[in-house]
Image (cartoon, rainbow, N blue to C red; front, side, top):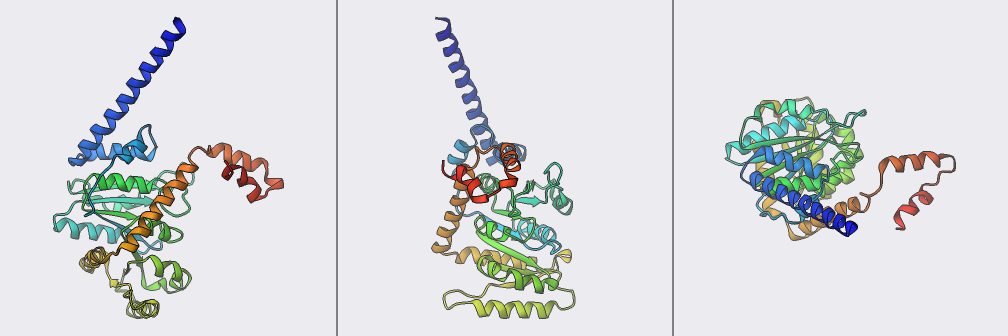
Length: 322
């Protein structure tokens, strides 16, 4: 009888643990919806670290369609964080609640966020309409946090009117953020001419709005004219050219026009784009869930041991054939 008793005792303990997690998720969710930022922070940390019950919690989420998820991307030094700060100010003036996820570069040593964005947005820390969370990219190749989709949905659940997601910089991130955001804002500066030529194809496809920041610099008007010309050439009868807005973010100039352009994009969004957006989100999560059981340290060690006879496709075959 003793083994049976032990088995029943273990089952009872598991039921208690699962009940605790379920209660914890429900309590934190309820508090976050009522505007408790501490509970929201806790929820984001639990989802970020995939704590027991996170997927069931995400599966139970429901939220409206009025929230706008706005992606801010662009090359380093374009003034993305300063622009984000001015956009927050515009929306707060309108009485809107704003949630911000800033993906900072990771430290190469401990993969933590360098927190540069928090310095620029420190004036909002005590505002009950604004929540800001810095995330490390954790070495993600695209410039976004590996759990950014899930954490954005937690922010949507919390009832923010606007959710801003700022990336590390342009690269693969402009494609990734297009699968995340309802509206993608690409921030450039007058000196970005050469970068536009290199990144043209990807940017043309995913940018909903171009912002030329630091527009008081020499050559700004010429750069805007060239950009508009390029956009007109790629437009079609059923697709208007992507709008270009000039800003001087440090002086809070042009931010109202950017907000208006974002609102206009949200109003004109079509069913085809929404379907593509949802498909992109679903594919990212499916790919991530399929690789979640791969132990990164074992994976690296396996690669290290095979370097002399390395063949990429032979190596990954054993992972994708399961």
